[in-house]
Image: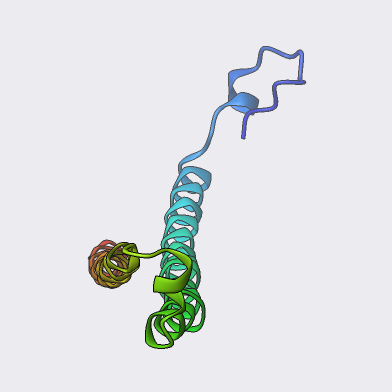
Length: 114
């Protein structure tokens, strides 16, 4: 990198050589590949695994419990359809998370491999 603290106006000290430019290019492409892999991993952890974990052991477990034992109708008469529609939306969003994950993996693989 250029030395901007050097008060000498010598152009050779502030210009990149061909070898440092190619190594910089290689390190940036390596860094970009690492960032893509880390994005795929974090997307999976938070958007796929996290969504499924919260949905199955939280939303679905609680909603099915109150729907099956009739508690939903006791607490909110006539509103159980709302809860059922939330389960359909939850499932739809879960499938959308999986779709996005597959798309991201395909694009990241294409970008890294070629």
